Image 1: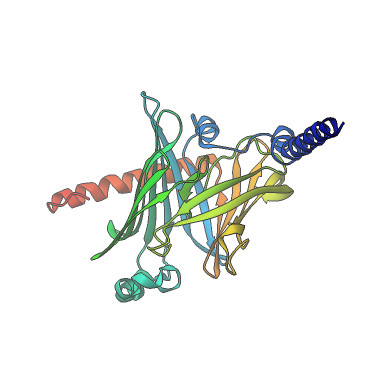
Image 2 (image 1 turned 90 degrees about the horizontal axis):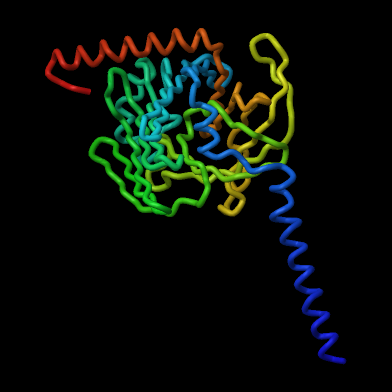
Length: 312
């Protein structure tokens, strides 16, 4: 008799445990669907033209951004991003460790155009294999550079600024998306309220000893956004610092994104220290004109550097 009740108790405990597992882990995925990943994002961008953004810094127009994508015949892909600041208060956004180098350039940087140029390389399975992000004065003077190579779950990351260099090996979170913290994203397909995922972001504006920041992302609801003169129904995606990171910053709001129902990102906000950087998507015809202008400027810069015996 005692053995019978023992077996019943074991089965009951097993059913309780499995019920918790299904309700907390399996059922949410079934109800809201898998969160976006780079495979679905690359598919959504396969035939996408260049995407351009108007950029606002604390309510003031600061510049523009441009996203382009290259697909290769061997299924490899590259995402390129250029975030252009007409001027940039470097002392307010550059990590303290770089202040001694940047300080002498700050007054000049307030008058010179500044760019954050990023590249993400993908393997045939849609996984990030390499990335680079550079803070650069025009014309093509690198101030801070972040580079990374991913091999399985291991990330080898390097940070350079003048005579300073820092190298470190980190473990990449499985299934986490990786991207530049300053560069806007163009597509997030298949969103549903309640979806959550992790993103690991890097930037030349991060402290060199903490090149990666882990963010928790959630689709919190729906919200109307005024875009192109119309009220558009969008998914509201919210970015917060990892709750498990500890300290005062745990769970802190780091950004928002408004995504049209078809997965097209229309607007996003990025927190940089005490400032807010807002990207608003331009119409396709304006993006095409900007991409053409940027390409022509790039060709002229390359020719000019070659003329003086330098290759950028």
